Length: 98
Image 1: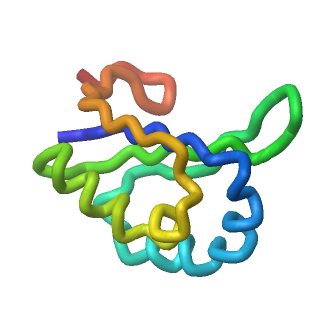
Image 2: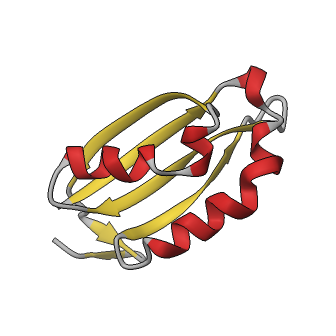
């Protein structure tokens, strides 16, 4: 099953992102094949980092939460909020897939 994970950063922890970025990316690389897509979000008004999105293949939302809780950004307190949503992909690369 696919899940979309919406991650919102805690603005008061902005210093965490550059400090743990290498560790965060290295962690994501251990999840290749399970994380279909991932990347940061930027606030369009302030141009500041705002969080991120992951698209994850997993058997359950609990499995996704376990992945998130092992992320160095999570451990360092960067995440203000996390939403894990089940997702059915209908379009990809400009084509209907389902």
